[in-house]
Length: 328
Image 1: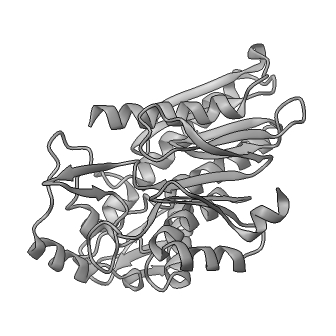
Image 2 (image 1 turned 90 degrees about the horizontal axis):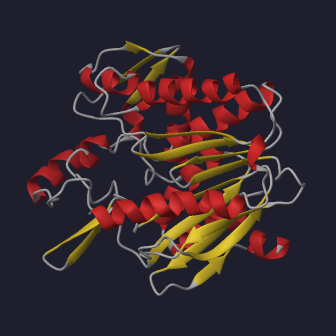
C-alpha cells in the first residue's frame, strides 16, 4: 500500500514539474497540503502578495470542510446523517449537487453521487483492505439513486433515508474552478493548480508557452508518464484503476465503483484523461467515460465540443479522441 501511495505522490509532483519547467523561482508562491484525500498544490507564477496564496489555503480548507464525507461536521456529512430531513447548506454545496445530478442524467445513472452507501463499504487506504460481503453490497446498491436528492432553495435532503452522498468524483473539479476564479479576481494570470492529479492551468507559463502535462503510465511505481498533453488555460483530469487499488486472492480491485454492481467497474480501460476548459467537467467526464467503457465513452466525448480525451486500455495502448487528433 505504501508503494502505491508513494507512486501517487510522485505522479502528482511530476505533473507540476512537467508543466512548469523554465519558471523563475523568485516569482513562485506555492501552497501544498494534504486535503480531499490526496496531496494538493497551488503554485502562483506571477509576483503577487503572499496573502493571495494564503487565500488559496483558506478556500481549500473551507471546501474540504463542506464536501468531505469523512468530516462529520461537513455539509455533505450532515445531509447523510439527516435521515431524510432537510439540511440547510451553502450555495457551493447546492451547485455541486446540481452538477452531480446533471451528470447522473447525462450518463443514464452510471455517474451517481449517491454511491456513498457502496463506497463506504470499500476502504482502499486500509493496511489490510478486504472485499465487502455480497450481501452488504447487494443491500447497499439498492440505495444508489441520484434521483433521491431533493433540493429546495438552499435546503437539501435524501428521500431515501439509507442513501449516502459521496462527491469525490466531482468535488476536486469544482474546487479547482473556484480557485481559478479567485486567482483571476486577484489579478493572477499564470498559475498551476494540482489537486491530486486534477490539474488546472491558469493561462500559460510566464514565457507564453503551454504547459506540458504528463499522463501517468498505469501502474508505473515511479509515476513515469506514458504520454503528455500541452495545455493553456485548461484542465486535465485522469481517472485510473492504478490510483487506488488492492489485490485479494489473486483478484484485482480498484476504486472506480459501478453503481449497477457495487463492485469495481470491469472493462478494458486502465485510465481516462479529459482535457477541457472546466475542471469540474473534466472531473465528472473522466469518471463517466471510464464507467461507460472505451467504445461508449469515446463516442460521448466525440459528440461534445471543446472536450478532448486520452483513453489508455489495459494493454497500455493510447487512444485519442477525434477532436484531440484534429488539434495535434
